[in-house]
Image 1 (spheres, rainbow, N blue to C red):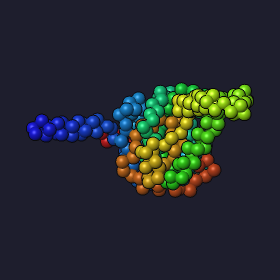
Image 2 (cartoon, rainbow, N blue to C red; image 1 turned 30 degrees about the horizontal axis):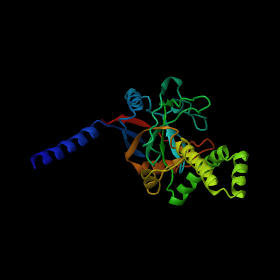
Image 3 (cartoon, rainbow, N blue to C red; image 1 turned 90 degrees about the vertical axis):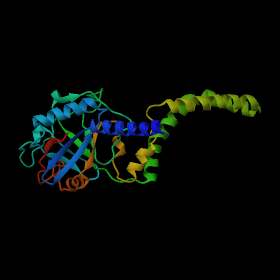
Length: 269
């Protein structure tokens, strides 16, 4: 009995200790404050973001790119004191961080993410930590998520099928069927089917939403189309209403709010 009780207390203490190691930052704006927990398993982004925050790097910058049902993006130094109508949002090539894209993090509402340059100029997916974006997204139905999976997976399967079901193989199957060689037909068809399934299951580009993704995207919402493409290094723990307020602001043709949303970042712990 003593050992069991000791084990429970020990596990609980481990959990508290693990959570206590997580860093918390606050992004204050003239529309309210948001707090975010930074993930410990994205240490490069956590360290770089906190260093810049402590330097005051983000203070006075704007949420300069706001798209309702998508995201709010800010932190770029080019947005500080930018006059109305000026095109802003340029990154800082000296503030890049190696990617820490982890499969168990996805773009649910409130995710704190690092933008980056496109793959053609940034094949290693390095992040630009001189700015950041927060996911707003929208709530999806189960059917919508199913459709997203099919849109990705059907073309992949079709290409794999064509790889194995060549004209020569089809002709061979046709001939076996006409000759009523049932055993040979089934053996060959079975081998082809197994090869197709193995190739498909090993393909890294297929899409299958996890239970956690489906739960989040059908309740709080988010933007699943971004999954696997950007590093997510934190999540909102308070101030979701502020995300909504900023995302709903009227913007110009460059998606910049007509009313400036000024940023100040504080490291809470």
